[in-house]
Length: 437
Image (cartoon, rainbow, N blue to C red):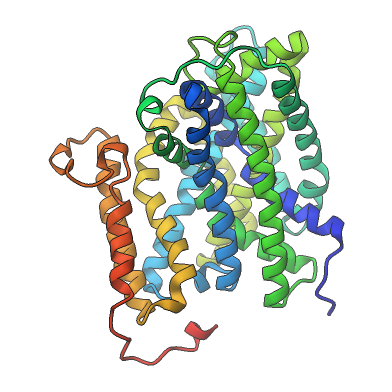
């Protein structure tokens, strides 16, 4: 079988991945971060791009190099531990946090401004409709590239280009001084803010979904799969960087039109209305609804694919279960959902980052199995300390840890653990067939 894709198909795969990534968090967090960063915009934006673009790109590449599946990537971990880790990530990016957030942001920014006196009933009805549409698209898993990569995403990208060009050509205010933590350590603060996009988690799972999508296009050989997966990741990363840079600059120049805003959605909404007048909200609604819908489709599809392979229930059954759960959780409210997700992100994001680093270094370790288990355990234990801190637990006794004050106490212990593993003895047991897969 011919293992090649047309340029249009490669572009469609890249656009599909870009659309899956570009969801609620990608839209609401950069404008607010840009406003707070002010004249420290550049280091804050660099930090954000590292976690929100660099890490997802590197993660997709790691998945491709590892063999294209979660099982290949975690083959040096106990099977139960790898499955549990995957399940937790899917729960976070699926029905617990990320997927319901897409529906909430779509309502708050895309629909609510047109309702004079919105109530909980409006949110409930919208959630049901929104996730019903997402489930309908996810239902036809094999046609995701055609439906999203070739139809929905181009419309979304055109809207984003119009917004970005308008922001740079006609900024709505002067860049103000930095505020809060952005004043003292903007790079680290921007790095941590990138956690909120959850894109490194998503890329761990979207990478597998993309392999399935490529297989549906006739790409089955490992080398060809790796090539096209990396190409898609580069297209998606370029698109995300373009969006984030424009949204950061939007936030940084928003003081005149969005003073006193307490979230990125409000900053973006008021800025767009200032740019485009009475038609501004229509432009914003189109962008937000499409961005959130495409991400919801990808998350529901990825979650359903995972759980259907680990349970007796079928893929389509899990589409229904996940979609209904998302609609229910979405009624919690945006602020509450974000506050609940932060400790979970601080606990698991460092583990995901460590796993990606280990994938690239695996061949250098004398004992890969020991290295994976030891490094991931160290990163998780120290990440729990950072998670406890943001959850309000008093862990001030550990303030002596490097980078503890900026919520990155896991970094140096994890690096030290990796260095130690370069000198660990070789495994006494022979390599398995799976290790050489």
